[in-house]
Image (cartoon, rainbow, N blue to C red):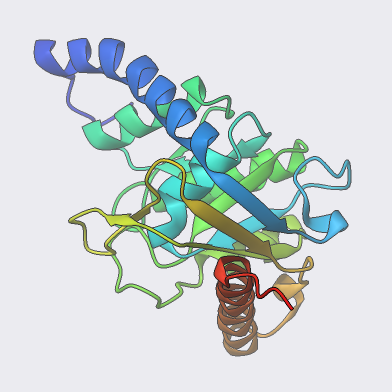
Length: 228
């Protein structure tokens, strides 16, 4: 890309070798999870309806990417080497080519790429507090995307009974093998039609609601059966 440094030999080797291995590892891990879904029919990525903007907190990114592999959802990766590694790994997980950019570099181009994907019939996903936080504080980019594309937003959350946490700013969640994992999605929300402040408030409320739903379903699932 214009303005990007050419990758070093070691980086080119890593980009050739690591993505297929990471893709296989993620597929193997996710195949062991015991999963329950709370997904309204119109919000499912294979519903056949018009494309959607999926919005979630950054801590859920690995769990959601692992679960929804091989679905027509376009992700977002930065223009750094790490972003290139993520983008190539997403391809090995069956996702479309990722948009490239972040709030600090190439963000406008990434926004245009996501809007174009929606216009071409692909879903997109956005971590609304990414790429660097603060955690659980949504940024307005997702509302701009919804407004420019005219597409609704679906809030996404996950919960699991056992977890690893990565040493990142958001302490990214990673369920271990055989974990119980719950995913909850909202109904499609017409946030792009709202005033910016109102749209942000409704997005935060939707994310909080689906997280509460996921936590409740997990709690009920983990509850021991009482025999009368």
